[in-house]
Image (cartoon, rainbow, N blue to C red; front, side, top):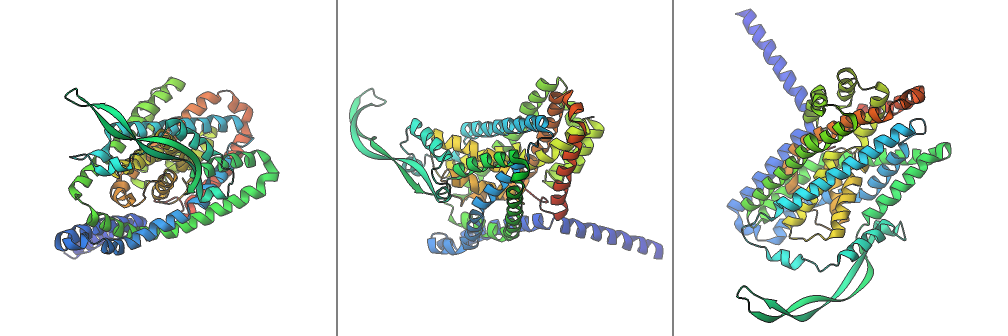
Length: 505
């Protein structure tokens, strides 16, 4: 009996130790889930027991106040975050030693990320998860704007090249219209024609309006980063400054992220309390989840698989089987960088990819290649527009595609990057950020699937770059080894500091 009791006690001790270790390793996720659950319960409880409170706008304002503070803090860091991240990232790749490899890798990353964004826009515009309503909403009619497509494109180009880079932080260019009523003939269902008054554009002017010109900052940062990377030794000081600024901003974001469970709790409670029809909103959220998962599945199993087969003439699903350990690790950790050692092992030991390629491409890919994140940004931003009855014109859709791509690249090294980059995309097209709390109720789950797509995209990229590089690997030789060693040490430093753990990459 004594031996049995001792064995039982040892078993209980091991179980307790394992649970404690899991809790400490996943403390943020546990707190986030608690915040979501408590927020939903609080919102439902207030609606059920104090319905009159939900009709009081001042009460809802007080209830959402901690969450609004979270959004304000995130917005505060948008400009320094995206500028420092993009300049630092673009300056780092490709290096002169591995210019050909870097060129292939960056080209692959940009193309596949942009394809993921376009796929997301196509799906969310076709399925329309935010428009799952029983009747049409008057708000949609009120917010549907008269916009000429050519003016939207010109505004996009103007904002890409701001005349004042400092002014781009708080103002952007926009075509404004004067409107009037005009009598037009309208034929109804009975084939009878009648005169009705229709709102038409009578004039226009190009003006600056308040709001951050994210697109202009992105273009400036990308170009400056590329130039710094080509300057060599003379640009090292400026690159070092940007690297330091990026690390400082990331540290600030880490502090804010630990506050996010509290902010999300009150944002969710306030949104549920203020909803006219909670059941309808959760139906929309279900359609949103389906749209994101469908997009990720198409991009992973069809788009990337076809690209891999076309360039390498190899079976992509065999590579997927060889990378299964890394893909499952990505699903569990929700971090591309935390999965990096496993990804390297699978690529080199199981898939047989040249280590000079894998150790150059993967650290870069874990930082800037975020196909799943980019697709999610596009779907989530347009979903929020649909929920709020906003009509996005051609220029705004292009802005979504460009900023989602840039945000996924520029903010990749930020803990819980999905939350931060979502604010960036919404700000760029002038959409309300309040609905982030509602999306965040399911984002912790979607995050794991899009991280898996990110890791799979890195693996496919390594295989393609190895095939394209061919005989050039031998000519680059030791230069690539030295360069990849430097990049690997830099990336491992991020992991050791925990900056990349529990990130929404």
